Image (cartoon, rainbow, N blue to C red):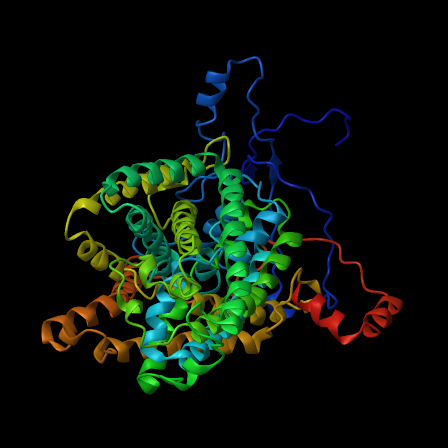
Amino acid sequence: MASDEPEKPKSIKNGITYTRDFEVIEMSDLSTNKSRGQFAVATSYSITATPRSRTSRKKSMGRRFVDSFRRVPGGLPITGNHGYHINDDLPEIAQAGGRFYDLRAANVRTANSALARDLKGRHLQMIAIGGSVGTGLFVASGLALYQSGPASMLLAYIMTGAIQFCTMQSLGELVAIFPVAGSFSAFSSRFLDPSWGFAMGWNLDNNTIADSDVSYALQWLFALPLEIISGALTIRYWNASLNPAIFVTIFLFTIIIINMFGIKGYGEAEFIFSTVKVTAIVGFILLGIVINIGGPPTDGYIGGQYWVNPGPTHNGFKGFCSVLATSSFSFVGTELVGLAAAETANPRKSLPSAIKQVFWRIAIFYVVSLLLVSLLVPFNEPRLLGGQTSVDATASPFVIAVESAGSTILPSVMNAVIMIAVLSVGNSAIFGSSRTLASLAEQSHAPSIFSYVDRKGRPLAAIIFASILGLLAYLVNVKVHAEIFDWLMAICGLSSLFTWGSICLCHIRFRRAWAAAGHTLNQLPFVSQAGILGSALGLIGNILVLASQFWMAISPVQTDPTAGEPGITARNFFLKVMAVPIVIIFYIGHKIWFRTNVVDTASMDIHTGRSFSRIQPMSAEEEEIRRAWPLWKRIYRALC
């Protein structure tokens, strides 16, 4: 500008008005090859930046509190492309009978969400380390041990862990360069097909919690009341006479209050919950070693005797396949790190470090702890099938292992940890569902009301909607509540496998478009350690796990003498695979209505929402120093 006085921000025709705070980062052409050929994309925007409105300190506290719930001023339109125009040298989108899906507009809106960026590095670290540690590990592993035996259980968890490691590396690369709202759900629309993004967002996994765009939202919406019920029933471990509805009220109120504090409230709560879970697992590992070596009070050294008698496997290959779904369920929630990218203060720095923690969580929290469980609890232990709910501590192999040490307070402590894990899942349910709903609304995949973000950066309408569904937890006193939730969760079952497979495929297609545009891997803020090969293996692995569940649905492992009856077998089949036809119906229905196409490489948007920075090339001296590092240090720097 010619004048030293800043010009008052005003609306610009054919321009985008940003209404949220953002960091101005110096940008430069990082391409080593200036000639990009036919894939050259020159995207330009007219931008007017206005700071987030500040409430006057002169107003009363009550008035400031009320004003905080008002919608953040400005914002991008949800319907049509009125108010902005994108010059990206791409062909105009063809309209089908007046109905068309504007993918470019959806990319712009998710890249410029009004969500507050208040998550710190320590929050992401603990979410990454303990985010998926819950009832899937503490309780469901007991059924896995019974169905497959110790060797098959460990092998299944290691295989699933390898798939999850590859998937999270792919997600880490994508969210580091595109820290946009909706994360993986938005990536499905951007890099695959808008209709697939729609289907993925609304159909989420049930096995406890998973995700996918539409499926991801449903999964978390139904998971909230289910986990609250589970937490309320956990209290029966200490006093079975209390009415569970009392604790439904307490837990639901607590979770809602936490999320009404915004992303800071969620981050701090998960930091505390994850710290408790991590401490409990480390304590169990130490105690388990002592019990295994010293033996219970009535016996001596245990060692590996339970691997000999009753044996290392049970139910053969079918037992191994039955554990694949259980182990996949145990890792659900890991992808929340990617969902939090749009609300992270410094995603380029925090996200890669958090993604690397996945290796340690798999190696220590799952493999080591389950190895000790298999050494302390035989697979034919009848208490493994004695639980009446999904979080019944009496069926937890961790509690059973601790009880072998004698009459102590430790079983109650472990049960309390399980209850905290359930609350953590409920807390994540509101976070995951509200952010996904807000992203779906910004992509025109959901009613526009869910895009309402208040002045504190909270997706208020989506949080309220998710909280209202939490009232379903009062079905706890209805005898058939378990049956009701079984069918509700069946609607979005297996969605985690769809979501993880979509993440891997998005990474593969992004890399192809990135290379076609003349970019190099050195320009990426974070490069997947597993690479394209890891994404391919992750995609294939998720497909194989999904296929194995069809076999389990048709011919399940028998744990109940009555399970062979035709009616119960049919029920088992539909409960396990109902999500598949529902995802297909969502996908085909959206595609027929909007007539979308698979996004081709030339049209793929690799610029909107991209995180830019000036890369300082590593000097020859620095490279020489790195090569001189001992092996242990190179491994440590690669994994931490």
